[in-house]
Image 1 (spheres, helix red, strand yellow):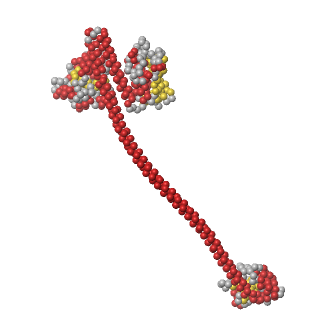
Image 2 (spheres, one colour):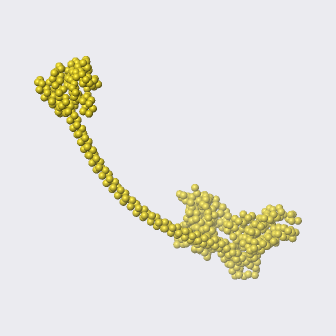
Image 3 (cartoon, one colour):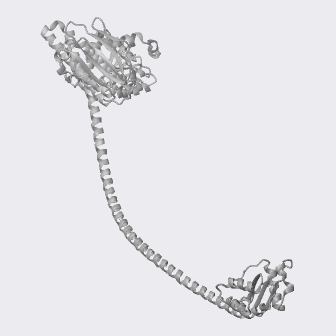
Length: 149
Length: 442
């Protein structure tokens, strides 16, 4: 697995259904999960410290409302890390409140998607994200496999 | 003329009345042209022409010199003035201690000297006259002074009385003023009290308003938190219900009978419907609260881009057309998007079974308003139901067609917030025409 998505989500049901959707999109193997912002920070710190053990993700799917470190707080932290600041972040949340949308983009989110209620829409979204971010999008050079050697 | 006659006439000179005619008669009787008697002024002794004779004579200075000469010489024939005048050449003055008689023209008469005898009487008479005149003048002046003083006294009294009256009036006015002033002062005190009381009330009111505002803000804040919580937390279990139901249908299809699959599908659709309902309620409450400004919205471009974004509004599912070019309106793009989406969405949804929806959108300017019409070939609305459809949760065909019953309430709220109106004309079975009336962009 050279490129993978880090899903930061506290709701186990959402994690389960997102993984199911990823499976239907054929990228189940490319999705790693962290149960909240704090867990994600720990994983990413480890990846910075020892890239041979833990790889950096190519894309982060970020929920907003989470215990310990919520989404926006995590985003602030991420954008302050020189090694991580260029990783694209897609917010995936229930909220479409203007203040959340505005704050997310202000703090450096690359995209903002509302969690759909219908599971077929969720599959569509995961499929689209895969095609756009993992296949079509040119990602920041620091995360090219060559830099991880 | 007898000497006695002349004496008799001359004696009349003594009486002041008729002195002139007596002098005329005397000069005629003496056979001279004119007769002037000069007498010394009783007070100053200066010789003056006696009253009744011409007081002012030409060449007065010469006359005075002539008369003075007469007084010194007793005869002054040679010193007569006007030597060229014949009559004056023959004139002569006769002087005595008490005066001078001048005879002008004519032949000198002896009798003229007799006239001198009259002079003391004449002088005495003149003095009496002068005294009488002075006395009369004194009396006149005394009378006049008395009269004027009486007049002045009267006037003074009048003035004093007037002044007294004025003083009294002024005093009364002052009293009135004092009373008014006191009254005013007490009114001012009352007003001051009232003002203080009012200020007190105002402060109290302000305090209460501030308290209520704070409470309201708190409530609004709580409501917003509540909405946020609904969006976030209530929807998560719904997603799970729907997701797991679908998961079971997909992953365990071979182990489920038709009934179980059907039941799971119902769980899934209900969850989606409830989610839609929650989102619609949130949309509605956002519309009610949102701060926004009116701006020019190109309705034509907006409608076309909305239609492009909905694949299910295109053939073969449906046909949504724009007739001509829709005018620009003064509104809010997000609000108008909500209106167009909901109206066209309804029109596509509410068609009789087997009928392909056919929607025509048209626009028209009427004065300073724009009317947008959405004509459909749907099931139509009975006139008794028309009032209900714009009210939240009032849906006429829920079971058959799905939906949340909030769409038209959202449209109505959005249009009202843009200062417009919404309505519908419909014949059941023949379709409906929904219209939006909005402000025209300049």
